[in-house]
Length: 249
Image (tube, rainbow, N blue to C red; front, side):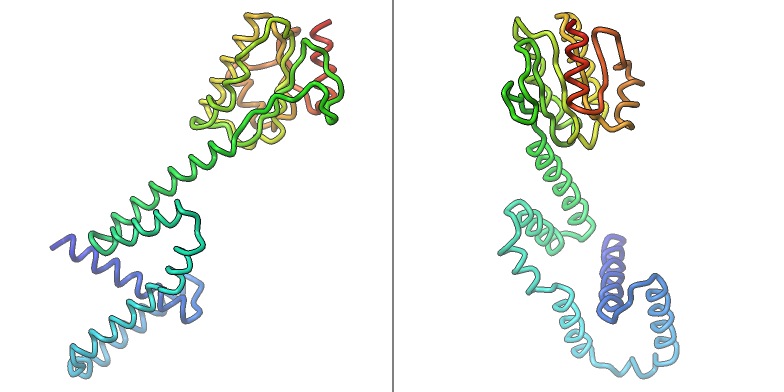
């Protein structure tokens, strides 16, 4: 009984919200005025409302439900949306019809979160720059630049930074160009710390280039900070290459 009452109250709240939006209401005051209007109608028109046939009320509810469903938008979304979004939409729709809106919303948020993480992982990558790349000029054989793009978090850090741990025998300096990195969580910090320690053991210098100041502060708090001949931060690639050459000398 309690479960039924909660679902009934949720449907009523959605119906009121839909009516407000379709009437042009955009402020929290609209819900307050709507509630006052319903209260006044119930108090003043209760004797008359008792004469409304239940069949008419059922038809009215069907019309409201149809307008709330936005069938045209639903069908268009299925036709043009990416496959993953369509799957989430259909699952949420079925859960709402078969079980309850609360369950559908919870499952939908969970699925959307998983899809977002998967897309972020796919967008994050690390590319080793060719030594003759026109944007970087000629690099010495004992120096390498990795261009890191995207968000580094628990889902993507290991994948993006895995290739950096592979050190060739003649390598003496590694430059991480992190200009396009927009997020850094604890998993990425631990991965960078592991890379720093691994390179230090093999006597390979590390330069982190153009990382946002707030992320540099995070690395410094974790112990990844300037060390003469081993670790440096830079603001431009020219500066990074100069720092690497200086440490090599």
